[in-house]
Length: 347
Image 1 (cartoon, one colour):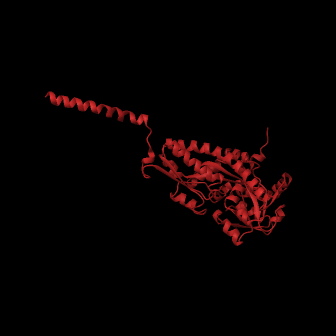
Image 2 (cartoon, one colour):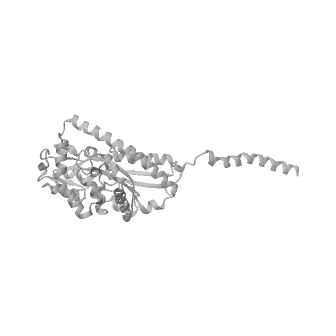
Image 3 (tube, helix red, strand yellow):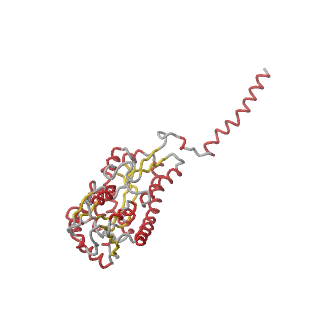
């Protein structure tokens, strides 16, 4: 009997350290979710169509890295750039089907769902990126964001690409009359179409990933885009003239599939929201920096003829585009026009 009791006590003493180890492990050691399978982790597929070295491409990677780190590997954001997973005209449908969960389309692409959002496409609607950011936070700006929800889209962040410039292979654009008879590639937007047609040009809609090939084939003479997008796709190598006009804003709403977003736990939503807010501020600064550096590189290369519109030129161009503002008001009312920062006066 004593022998049996001794064996029992010995086994008990050996068991105590294991009990203590198990009891303290969750507190002392964070769980490594990276050891879980893809089905056990939360995987977010993020598709976009621009290059990895653009502000959007770099912000997407930074967001993925921060989320992985802050969730201890539980949330994995898989980033697919350059339209490698879905092309420009495919990603909205893929998001709707739930094949991907996150995209960052140019705001112009959203005019099919919320036509009033074409306010962002009006030439010289904004005179600085700060004005864009200010407008989005107004009641009018938030109304536009809310209207996306009716199409199962949740806008969680705004990323800048910057202001657009015009390039072409036919002649220098010093005056808006120089745009006459040029065939120009545009994104899908009624305002962008009227922007060029009102000047006697011929706008043609092509997906961003097709622009280089269409320029190479001669299907279009020129295009408008931000400097980082123009250089990331080597578009400027097919153009002879570039005008720094800063005539229109190009930005992206980062969109979740709304059903997917609503399915997430509250702590996950909070982590994603806070991380996006941090990346947004970082991306805005990066955009300014990269566009300045890109312009300097273009100036230094001497590979394309550059022309800068003066402030007086821009004011003349802005006045020339007033009929587009009237068109917008006739179709969508004046609520959003009146909310533009440039029409606000200090009282």
